[in-house]
Length: 436
Ligand code: UGA
Image 1 (spheres, rainbow, N blue to C red):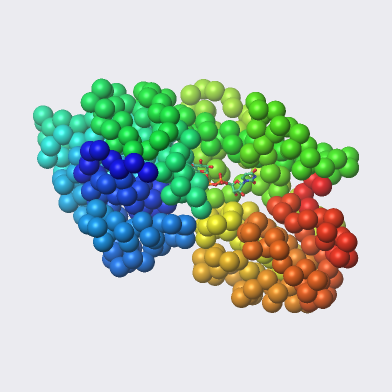
Image 2: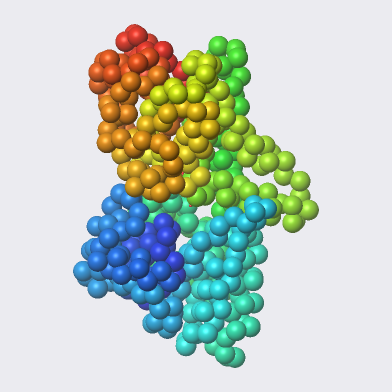
């Protein structure tokens, strides 16, 4: 990584996945970064090096940044804003009951910023927001700030994936800059100069839309392949080979064609719902998106039905669950398909044991009536079924002979098509995947 030629004074408001990663990475690029969060407890723990999330490489970046005095944490918005030239907004935009994004935290921050403008600032939205939010931020800051203080608003959506966030931030596929002035464009281009990636400069509305359209498109790819997997199950075709064959066409691409129990996490479910609302507000019927959402939730139910097909009655059956996080390499369980499936199995009266390499502390807070295990083998003991719900690498090369001996009935339900079906069947397992 080339060092930044120019160093910027940056404030990042919000220390969630995006905010904390952005703050740590900007500091690594040689900038002075103040990361602000209203949660004082969180801030005092991060200052001591206790990172609230499991994200590969992040704790080291934060520790290095703090040690080198490039990265600071505070719960004072005024301190962060007044000591900085660029202010990134990366606060949460959770779903409201109707699926729309709740922008109250964004509006709040915009008012705070307005109250503390002491010199020209470039205010950049990094949170995922509906198109035209930038306009609202500009209006709000103008309304609540002192007359004559100059500022620009810009949009710089983030495309990082949890579990690979640091790498995605420092080596992205593209950098999108939504700006309305040359001054803002030049500042952001200089800030990102050390990051080697194509830069796309657009207006703010376009940048905002790129983010929602990208996430919704990826979610649509997943639901598409999941629907194809159902046809595979009925016809005896193999979804893995179908995805491979489709993906060999460069126009389609193989990524995000992994059939399974569907997508979860803090982004896709929320963003698809928000995009549906955005379309509605724009008077556009975007029915594909409604179907993407519906297909995704049916896929979870379908997987439970497959377990029932094999075990018939689930009441008092022992099911060992491997994986609770919404995907591997993260401890995040928000909107995790695994959590949903565990709750469905519980409601059928099954006895559930759960193991996850990283997500158990979070799972313990929300899953009631299940037994948490220290490893795969204790999860498998006396089980009528092992359900693999998150494809952690650790599950690939297990001692399957030992696993089989431990189980009451060697039935493996693979919700991620992660394991070697032929090998497991040769060992005497009853195996079921999705669409294979
Ligand atoms: C997603 C996007 O990939 C990022 O580009 C974006 O920045 C981020 O949302 C965001 O908006 O912040 P993330 O939610 O971390 O990133 O996770 P993904 O790797 O995209 O996976 C999302 C879900 O889809 C997971 O539950 C995963 O298991 C599932 N998935 C993914 C499939 O079921 N099949 C696939 O082929 C791929």
